[in-house]
Length: 182
View 1 (cartoon, rainbow, N blue to C red):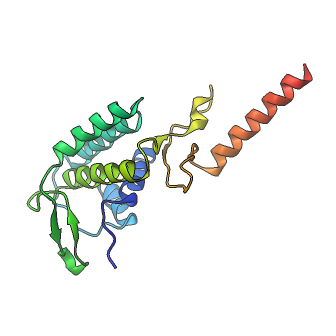
View 2 (view 1 turned 90 degrees about the vertical axis):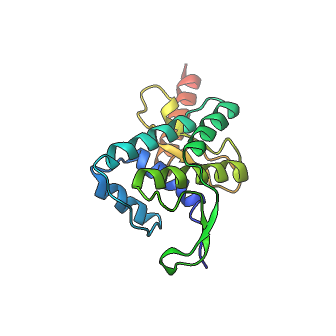
View 3 (view 1 turned 135 degrees about the vertical axis):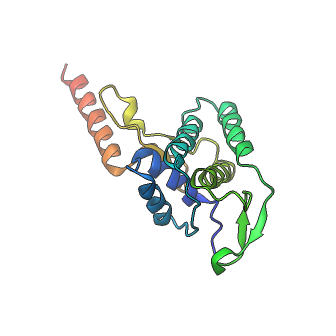
């Protein structure tokens, strides 16, 4: 079975890049491998910074304050990556869909297509609200700004990790205790 590469993993890969930006192009490519991409990318001297720009554009989608703005920003990304969908069996991996021009196999252009289509699928199938920043960072003094890709069954994931959720719970508990102590 071959999973469509434009699914949940694409959004998780984008979040991984945003939260822990690699030091070089090789690091970006290694990260794509960690998330299941197997294709070879044509190399260009500006790949690193062009890919950073793709991730920064995607973060604008994450940070959009309301659904209409999120959709508009994501549509802009999709328009930049547009090519007609096509079936492919590159590398004998099994038939799957590509949403990019086969002639354009640069790292930033492929990632723009994979990330934008994956994000669109994630938001339309799971809910437009299922992409955000960690709620721990909403508390003054908490530095967490990690991306949360909500893949939970109930759609209520607010924290990037158990660690951040626990830290927030401890703060709430201490706040309640200090209120009752006064």
